[in-house]
Image 1 (spheres, rainbow, N blue to C red):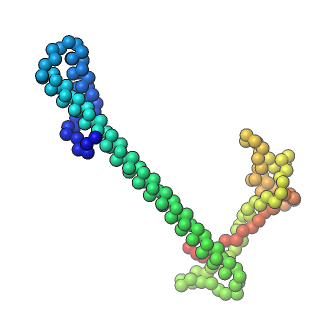
Image 2 (image 1 turned 135 degrees about the vertical axis):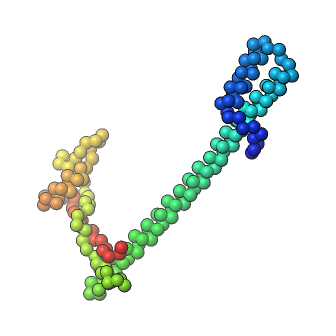
Image 3 (image 1 turned 90 degrees about the vertical axis):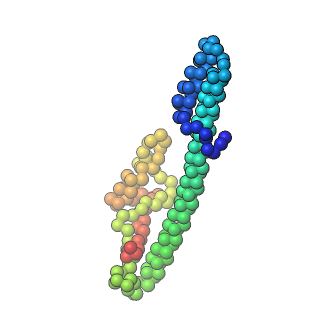
Length: 172
């Protein structure tokens, strides 16, 4: 396979030309030097067209591999930055929460504060009741939204509770 083909006849046209010459030879046309030259030229055009396609596929495969590698590195970097951000926010939240008497502010006067989340998250603490809070998809599963609604309405459920998390305000 060459990097720079000598002809630039499109693959489909090269195939048609080659096919026509083969038909002429098969149909008992006299096989002379002119036909041999046309045959060789048509064969060379097909070979060059195939080489160009193989070269293009190879180049595209390399670009795909490079893009996938870049994507993987980018995903890894994003996860690293997210962990750093989450760690900074969590540490800041702990410091602000442990010193409620200090007015934490930025240079523009925007206050940092730790507040309860407006909606609680559901925390399953034991074996759940399949008769009451179940939904069937392909198997019996806990219907978490229905259970959360019941708990918010004040219903007592011994295997679940609502947990209000806290969030840090003022970091953005």
